Image 1 (cartoon, rainbow, N blue to C red):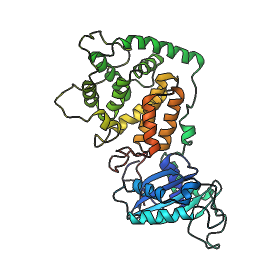
Image 2 (image 1 turned 180 degrees about the horizontal axis):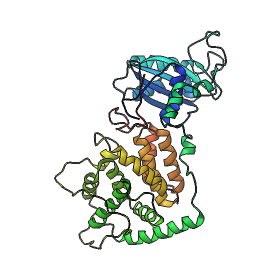
Image 3 (image 1 turned 30 degrees about the vertical axis):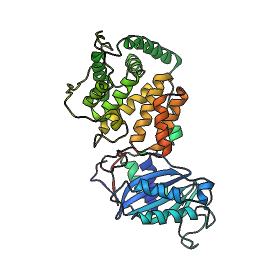
Image 4 (image 1 turned 135 degrees about the vertical axis):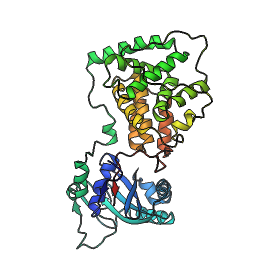
Length: 398
């Protein structure tokens, strides 16, 4: 959607109908908090609902919610929705203390809670209304949300609500045994040739060019040989990281980081290899005097000011194809998808992809580091800044 498009929120059912489109799935056992700018909707945050121990003392949880929402610097209000089937059908319910702590914490941060709701599988109702006339128990049917005008308009404009992260991070369709065996055999053959060229500057530059051609659409959909070659390239951690960095910040940053890490060897003069029919793309000429951010700053989303989201979206699609055959290369591809999900501010999807990566390759180091960031609740730098954050779509909702 274009930023100028306008979506009208007519009532709470529209707000609640917008949430699954914003997240990409219907949440469960979740708190969803939305910032507001006057009467306009801002950022959407989803967190697992706290367990019994945190419900007894919810202040730390409430502080964390305020900290996340405060990244939306222009926010002056908030909306809260608790998606759960437990503890709210009979007032006051087990979440009253949590809601009170959230209201106090957010108000202290200048984000007054405008409204709050409970949403279950079958019913939903206001969290603050005790009037049995206007808010009868157990509530209104959830179908009211699914039939809302805003939900219908979102669907009309091309948005859809997909499976949960646990299901959405799984492969949609497995390759046949013969297809998988063919790709893995070709991958091993490419890996043997690439292994002797790990220190080659020419091979590195050629590799980035081939990846660039794929990310710009010249190599999609991938043939089996192309997939095998790209999977083989992901076996080399320095090359894997360079591909991620190039997608977000360009070839200059990828080349500069490789130079800084000293991965090139003057004596490695073997001619670069790769599929003849996989284009070399357009690589930037490397200027060592050009100031570019380092790998660490880019992978944490601290630099550049705005990442190349189109390129990252393309990389995500390519990595989805490359993850199908599993193994160490599949773990690398899934880790890349987890990193992109984290950059997008989609922690649930990030955790699911990274968990799958570790299932494929236990101890895979980058996946371990990334999943620790996700578990700590660390936000990617881009996701924490409204002007840089990824947008699944860009409605102007009011």
